[in-house]
Amino acid sequence: MKTKYKIRQIIAITLVLLFFLFISIKIEKRIAQWLFIGLDIFMLYRILLYYKKCPVFIFNDDSIISKSFFKTKIYYWNELNDVNLSCKDTGVLLGASKYEATTLKFENGDKIILWNDTYSNLSEIRQYIFEKAKEKIKDIPPEIKNISLQILGRKIYKGSGIINLNTILIVGSFFYCFIYVGYQLIEKPSLFGVFILPAFFFIGFGFQMNYFIIENDQFIIKNHYFPWRTISFSLNDILEMDIEQPNKRSTSVRILTKDFQSKLYGAGSLRQKNWDELRQDLKYIGIPIRND
Image 1: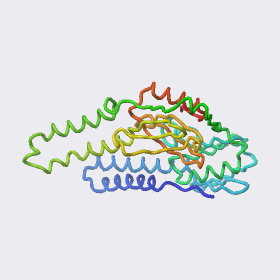
Image 2: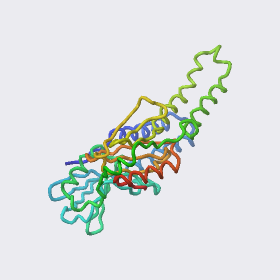
Image 3: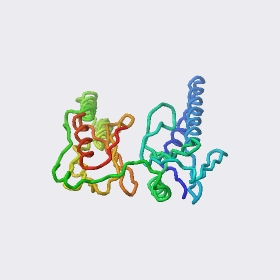
Image 4: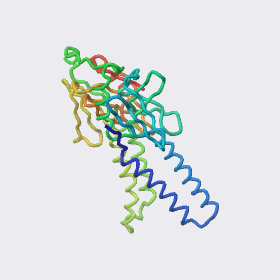
C-alpha cells in the first residue's frame, strides 16, 4: 500500500507558483519584478520543504519505506513502539501550529507523521496500520453506555445563529457593498456584481455555522444557515472525537469513525459553555473526546 497526495493541494500550490511567475514576467518595474521573483523562490522553497516533510510512504508486510527527493529510509514493523491513529502534531511548514495526523513512533526515536490534510487515502492507511499493529495503538477505544444515553435523552448544543462573528462579518460586508454603490444600483444594475463577495462569505461562513444534537444513538449535525442540511452519525460508529481550533476558522468538532474516516464540522455559534457541555456529555456516554 502506498500513500497518495491530495490533488487539490498540488493544484493550489502549482497555481500560486505560476501566478507569481506570470506577474514577474509581465511586470515592467525592475524592483517589483525582483520582488515577485523572490516570492517565486520562497514558494518553491516551501514546496520543497513540504514534500521533504511529507514523503511518499510504501507499506509492506515487514517494513515501511519512505521516499523523498533522492532519499529513501526504511522502518521495520518489529521496531514499532506505539501508534496514535488520531492526534495533533506540529505542522509541516513554518510556525508551531498543530494539525490532525496519524503518528508511528519507533524504538530508536524515529517518528512517521501522516498528515490528514496531505494524504488522500489516509483512511485506508489507518485501516492497514490498525490491522498490522493493533496491540501498539494508544488511542482510547469507545465504550458506549446505553444507560447513559437513556438518561441523557435529547440534547442540543447550539448558540445564536445571529449574534456571532461569522454573521456579523457577512451582514457587515453586505451593508458595506450597499453603501458603496448606493443609489447607483438604479442607474447601473451591473453594480449588483459587487454583492458576489458577500455571497461567497455567506456560503463559506455558512458551512462553519453548524450545531449539534445527541438523540437516541445518533450524533446529528444541523446548520443555522442551511436548515435543510442534516448529517447523522451513529454513536456506535464513532471511534473518537476532537474539539479543535483550525487556523482562521471557527472552533470545530472532528469525528473519526470506525472505518477511519475523519471529518471536520465548524460550529461558529457555540460558546465556551456549549463546548464544555458537549465535551462532558460525550465522556458521559463513553465517546473518547480530545481537546487539542
